[in-house]
Length: 130
Image (cartoon, rainbow, N blue to C red; front, side, top):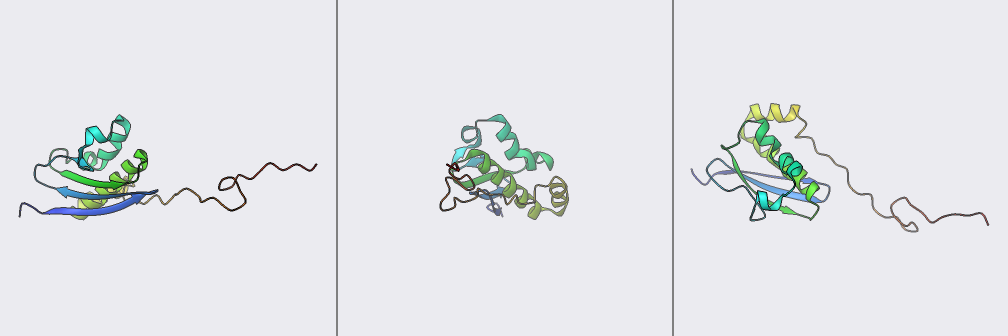
């Protein structure tokens, strides 16, 4: 079946990425834009493609991503994680490779919320005795 794809969703910080992984020729797109247009920094571009490079699937797998939120670094990390999840569900050997590279482990760190009576999450007003 030519229209078959693998679907995966994952998050990083507040970014949420939905990936569709195709085995037939397709453009690698993020939010309906070319990946090179969407991700302009080379280091972030490399991070997004790491799971595909690690599994040696450069021109064999194509993807389409829908991403939310605007911080590009957390978006790219969410893309990397969801690509790794899609590849791991595709084949068991890819799952072993990606697990050794720690691409299937979720980084649950988020921004701590602001508390009442404080300026930020932990910063409080200056205190003086007199």
